[in-house]
Every structure is written in C-alpha cells, then in structure tokens.
Image 1 (tube, one colour):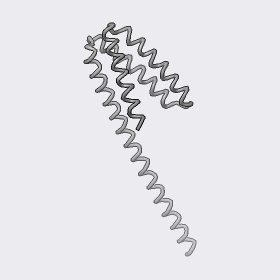
Image 2 (cartoon, one colour):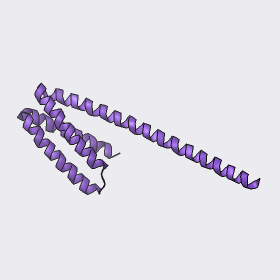
Image 3 (cartoon, one colour):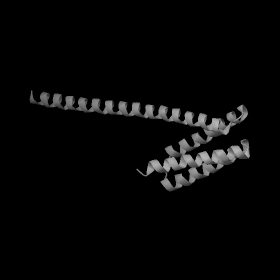
Image 4 (cartoon, one colour):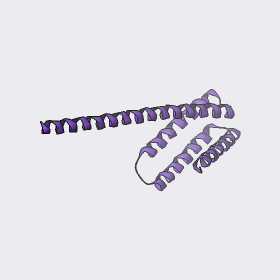
Length: 132
C-alpha cells in the first residue's frame, strides 16, 4: 500500500508540473503571436505614413512595398539565425545599404532625401528606446 501511495504521489506531482509547463508554453505562444501581429500592424502603419510623405505614384508604391518586403524577410532570417551580434550587425548594415540603393532607383531625388530623413528619425527613435 505504501508503494502505491508513493507512485500515486509521484504521478500526481508529474501531472501537475506537466500542466503548469503546458500552460506556460501556451501563454508564451499567445504573447508571441500577439507581438507578431502588433509588429505587423506597426510596420503597415509606418509603410502607409512613409508612402504618403513620399507622395508615391501607384507604380512606385508597388515597387517600394516589394523592396521593403524583400529586405524585411532577409532581416528576419538574419535575426533568427545563429551567430554573434557583431557579425549580425554588419550583415544588417549591408542589407540596409542594398535596400537603400534599390529604393534610390525608384524614387526621385527629392523623394529619396525625404526617405533618408525619415530613416534617420526612425534610427534616432530606436536609439532613444535602447537607452532606458
């Protein structure tokens, strides 16, 4: 009878820990999904705002969105990959430079200057958030 009680206690404890672990993973998954959808919404809002500031034609807007999607996907892959921070940073900088060249091709000189100004504002905001 004593062995049965020990096994029952062990089984119950294992079951409780398993349930707690499953709940935690489910909650983390929900938070990640929410964060991803929030991020996607923020990116879409930024794209719309930037498109309006640049006064893009329909053709330019299509090209601009395609370029942004292409390089966003590259950046996401890089963020999710292994490797040290410095090499990732250098790779991200390279990706951003290629993106800027592609964007420059489709924009007029004045539009490109506005684009660069907006990117600098965005970098300044990111730096401000990191300092806290």
